[in-house]
Length: 396
Image (cartoon, rainbow, N blue to C red; front, side):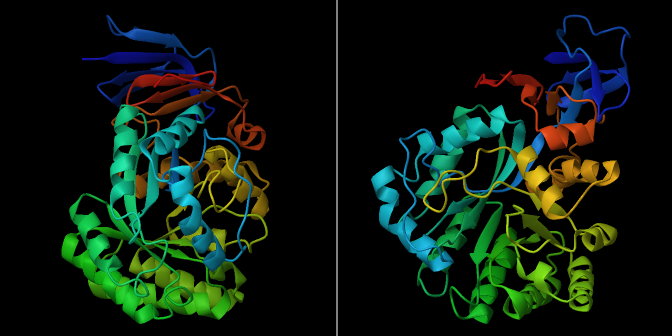
């Protein structure tokens, strides 16, 4: 048995404790200063704040040019324009590749992410190659990041005959989810796209994670379609709407009705809290228990030059976008990026408790709100009970 003990850490900013991590799980959490297991590796936490490993609930690790020379932004700024620009240039930059995905995953590790749900492009140009590259990258890091894959039809579904079959093949090949994108504005046939996606999900036993950029009532209409199909297919807890900007733009009564529907159907939400978008009705989502996950989206890719892979920084952006100020609200923003995101990566629990995965991040902070607003460097990152990063140096 491999045993690592983190002594004198402060879980969630509480009293100093010793964490015993054995065979990839948290074996005990006890007051600091007690007896330690014989033969264990011991790391002195020196009073640092301890958080669970960060969870990146919406990523695109296959798309990045991280580690290559700077790539200048080009192409049209619309969703359709970004898709066309990426399709035209990705081969020039070797996208997708194992090396590129591994570079992004190492940045995740540097910033304390130990589990991610990543979308991986599946289309007529790349086929299923991207899935293989991402799996190889995860293996290269020795599992330092637990990677769940969404087979993602970035270029559309119905408008690209053959993509539904590729998504079906990806589900058979081990993708945990299949994706969709703007059933109305990209495919211009929301019924056909959603019917096709839900049929695969029911047939193959996978989840769904659907990008929805369409705004206002057009977006709300598609949310209603997703809710209705989720209920009909019995897929409660297995369907996610990503982005869903429309929800924040609707009148309060309309929002409340949709939130009730999302709760009753068991549909979750993923956001990257982008600047300039309307805040989500987050408190209403929290009150109803609608799962909300945070993610980095693309990082230095042909869509945007921005991003560094730090989900804690995304949580700060979420807090600022939603006007969070109190300690409780700021702490909840950090929970969105850690413990409450367990379901997005297929975990029943992801926290600093006995029986949880042994994923721990140590930072020098007074308390959790302080850690959020300062986004301090990660002093130590532990994944699956082994140290994978220390003071910014990635060890895998």
